[in-house]
Length: 490
Image 1 (cartoon, helix red, strand yellow):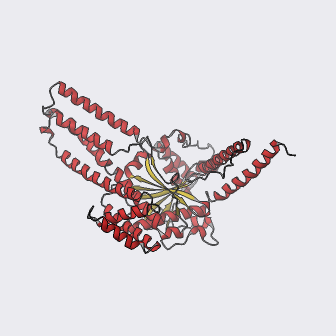
Image 2 (cartoon, rainbow, N blue to C red):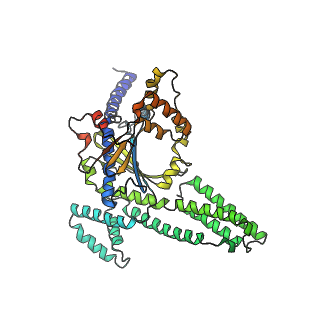
Image 3 (cartoon, rainbow, N blue to C red):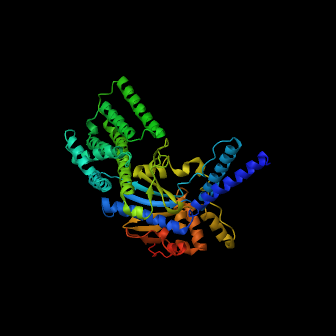
């Protein structure tokens, strides 16, 4: 008879090999060049679908930026190793303690990621109403034509509540098809609420800019300052605790200042002429902050709605094998205390590939790139972005380059009209280390170009909505697909 130790080892070996082999098969395309080109194709399709619905050249403009990245080879291998080790630990514990065995090595969803950044959007809501209603009603009626009469009947019953036909139909869709289109009404309401907020803020900005400080009392001025900070606080997400705390401190500080002025019986006195410049500068600085932040919530709600619409209704994405995951642990709203705000949509793709599509407002994107929520300021990322020392001998350059480039993500950008640029290694290096001192980065770039001039080569490819999936292309050679792009370098 086998002893318990032998049984444990045998069972552990069988289960481990089965799960790890399946995990490796699912992730074997993570660094494949053909998969990278396919991801460029998926991103181009998302951009083209948004353009066909919401306006030509809308994506790739200053208002809608769409770009992607594949994690670095170093990061991918590290994540795979951690996932496998976690599974081994769980498996050992389950066998030892006679618990249910873990089903599989946990999947990794962010080897590939896309991001849509929306900035200063205001007049899109009405377009969204019409397009979304058309899309969703057509989809519903195609699935079940009998629903058409039901929708008409419900819409008629809502006429007493509102005269806006589009809003009536949205409410009908939301109530009837919540299972197929989760949070539909919430997404739509967010756009309406945030657009109304922008209208109010614009009125406040106009009135405040016309304020004659030479005829303004201390009380009026500090109340106006407090109003400015209150608006900034309203534009901040509840979960952004650190940001809210800073703003609230400013509010309390100005309330205290107002109390001091009351004690000195100066509250109804006019601001002194000799100091008007100082008071004007402070007020204008706050107005600029409000102006910059006012689209913060509207941009995210509009961008999220547009992405949601494309993922739910695009036939071309379905042809490419792209499926939107409704798993709430993967598709989520991310609201961090440090002010990092984004909506995440998770995609299931052929051959085990997975990706994330992230939506951010322009304000939050900048906040997450250079501000307090910057990725490189997170403690676990500080060491990762350390530049390796250049070799003293030129013959060791390519060994150094290989090591350096293993730490670089592969970036790709969408420029509108189906065009995707795949960054060269040099461009990847510049973008990844843009948080470093520019002079240091420039020094490294000059060194690399001196040793390896071909690093300048950047590739651009144009896709169309008629393209077949490059992942399924027969007899395709991945390296040929990537490196035979037309050279439309920047």
